[in-house]
Length: 170
Image (cartoon, rainbow, N blue to C red; front, side, top):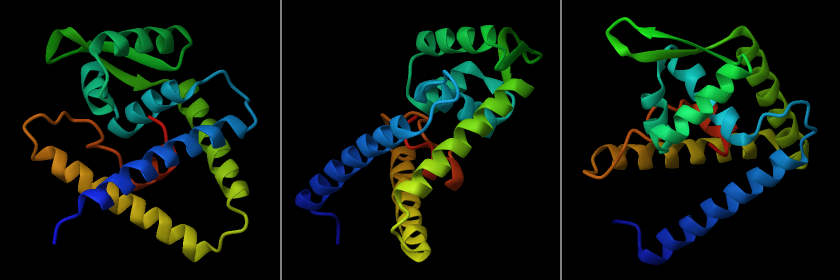
């Protein structure tokens, strides 16, 4: 049996509420860097993909190439990413995280993890694990459905379980 309109609507509202809660939780975390959620999302995608083109990251994040280009220029200026010519296409460049980028991303992920852990201090481990499993299952189902959609992009197709549950706002 397929999902009813009422249930689909409830899921949409719950997902939006979860996104807002995660953004608020991120805001509650002590800030030790000037990285914003969008920058962290780009760094995370580059980390997951390894050396990759900016256009591929833009497609996975569902943003335009011009917005991605601005993000990459800022990240490169701050020494967080390294750009080198793509040997397969001299017009394109491949991106990877610099050592500083890897360090800053790890610090940001640790802060987010500690914040969520503190905010969920009243939860039992089994409940949190089950919530992570359900969210991961929902993400996988949505990605699979999007891959079969003629209007779908690569958005979200490369996030692994860890990044999907830690990222929150990408």
